[in-house]
Image (tube, rainbow, N blue to C red; front, side):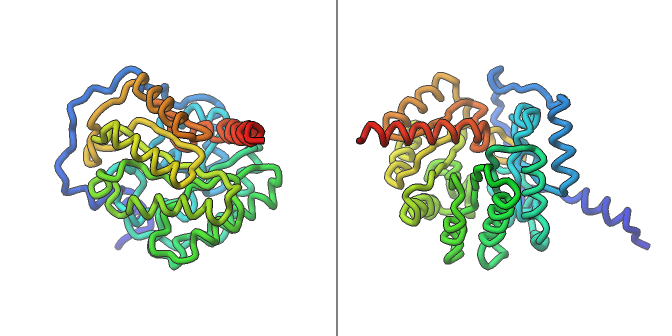
Length: 323
């Protein structure tokens, strides 16, 4: 007889990435440099944030994606909430989020997220999600419900969304933009030449067009995108990506070091030095981005609240100079 305990054990024993299980280990042989190392999360603030997240039955991208900054951010009660479940329908070669067939959408999640945001006293919150190719709208309506619930419970909190690409989901993007998040983020993740191996379920020019379309729908909305380096890209490819983003009028670019979640994931091709990150930041500002964050440990939601304040100040300064 199969008991409930046996079922739970079976579920927990399932691999997070069954589609990668047959692959040979990917090992570049590169030693992780000192500038990548971070302290383990042990602070009182970290455990308090974890308690709030767990008590509201929520998922964070911080935990699911294995973010190296989780100790720092959670200590300050900063968290990026991942909605629409914890199982993704894509199988990107870089990502640690569980892949497979998702469960149903939790109708209580918008209110639970809003309550957690209020409990944590967040001035700025990031809402992201897994890809939900199984849903007719890709989860767009759920994004809207979460945004509205946060604004109802915490009217002064600014909302940043980090969305999937809504590939072949007509009207989904327009629905989210109409909810007027303060920042619309969609990460390109890597340069165009890497898409077939690193992000095979996505399309580079579709993602670029998505960001461009946001500005067409609402020219005042801040747009943002991020990439990882160390995946075999060349410097010229990164510079071309910057040009493409500026053509789409994207305001904010983040660049961080790719870190391999497991040996079954894409291997690290290079550890980019802090000086190289500084060079990328200089180049990006020269191309006209309002805000750039480029460092080995930069992630798209890292310091999102502080960066949003800087982003608004940069736009105000630019508008004042134009006048």
